[in-house]
Length: 137
Image 1 (cartoon, rainbow, N blue to C red):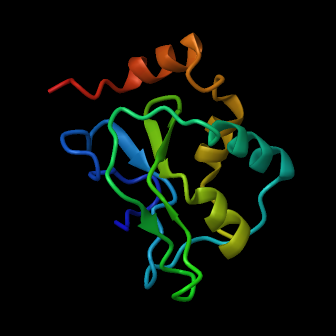
Image 2 (cartoon, rainbow, N blue to C red; image 1 turned 180 degrees about the vertical axis):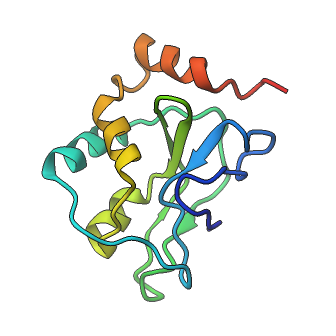
């Protein structure tokens, strides 16, 4: 999987580096913050991960290379979370990273998840569209 430092531009999606900020793009060999997260945050994150909206589809999963070979899990989706002045994007592996590897997302992401409107609601799409339009030049 691609690695991006937290809250830096996410260039994984062509033409959108100035519109998206990365969270949880972990890769073996790159240090990441570890620590506890609240049960309320994890519960809300799991709700948003049930059926996340995505502007594009990807063919095939990314696998967690922090796990030993043979036990690696994968994902093929990403979660887009509107924040105050950016859209934060994370692989859906973030749940695994938190639970299995004690990844501690940035406070900005935690706050944005807790404030995020219900996935695919009108409020959600309004918040996303205010900050990010994948078809913009």
